[in-house]
Length: 337
Ligand SMILES: C[C@](O)(CO)[C@H](O)COP(=O)(O)OP(=O)(O)OC[C@H]1O[C@@H](n2ccc(N)nc2=O)[C@H](O)[C@@H]1O
Ligand SMILES: Nc1ncnc2c1ncn2[C@@H]1O[C@H](COP(=O)(O)OP(=O)(O)OP(=O)(O)O)[C@@H](O)[C@H]1O
Image (cartoon, rainbow, N blue to C red):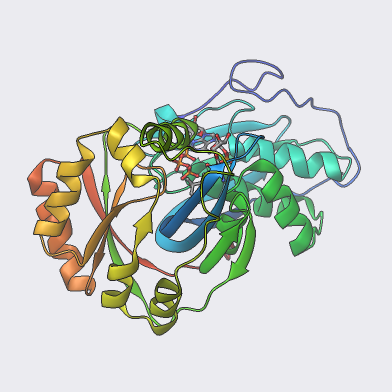
């Protein structure tokens, strides 16, 4: 499905950029487009600290990019507008709330130009699924607009804009595997010694990331442990997990997977417990909720095992669909024309 919007400045679905002729950096641009491919992520470890006064949580967030991709195409237009295609297109905002639009606006503002661009998102990453789909589109749009407009932003500038727009966005730009500190936006690249095979069980309907963090705080307080920075130990990456990634050892990684948000996601969506059991019964080395959920991630021994687990999950009726993917996958990349 393609969801399109009127091309009226300020109208529904338009971000309202006007059609001034020849703004600096945009004059007489030939009609061309730039497409960027951006991966989804799974958090192989998500250690969550106490809630900070600003409402965020410090993390030890071990990201792995996986081979489910959105494609963001930027093309010259009179106004900023967004179109989306894909099975979940109806759930994606088409106004300034779209993270891809926000990326275009942020880059244009820094360079003193008008964000006159048509961003088309071919969406394959589940929406509100805990796989950073909106963040992927944000990083993709940033890279595509930078190439289209010739703004020539440095990697550092792009990463700075990404961090302003969302905690997961810098990782969507860089991909591979990385440890995210702070909100998850301060990245240290991690080495991986091989390819890991995954199955992702996509749920019907999403979960709100802030609601899942709030539920994590509520569960911690209800257990009597408290939930503020003073109550919760500093989150740290597990040495065994980093070693398993570096060695490319799927069995060792399976033993070290951990997500502090999983109890909160399952509390808000109890049906996820059955999904996790179904994938484990089908032979997954390990199962966990991906980030804030509700997508469930299953680590498989190899590509063949992943195919069998996906078929069993689909047949189990405990998810909407099951997708096979592998990681690490590259970050946001301009697709050659
Ligand atoms: C769950 C994860 O996907 C794991 O990678 C991320 O932590 C969420 O990253 P994101 O969707 O990019 O989140 P943001 O857009 O930065 O923040 C959305 C909301 O999530 C909560 N949030 C997010 C990141 C963080 N370290 N602590 C938080 O408490 C806050 O309520 C925040 O207002
Ligand atoms: N380009 C976009 N694609 C999808 N959702 C978007 C986009 N821009 C804004 N959103 C909004 O962001 C919300 C979260 O969507 P997203 O797919 O990023 O969730 P998520 O994968 O759970 O995020 P994360 O894993 O980073 O916490 C959606 O419900 C939607 O309202």
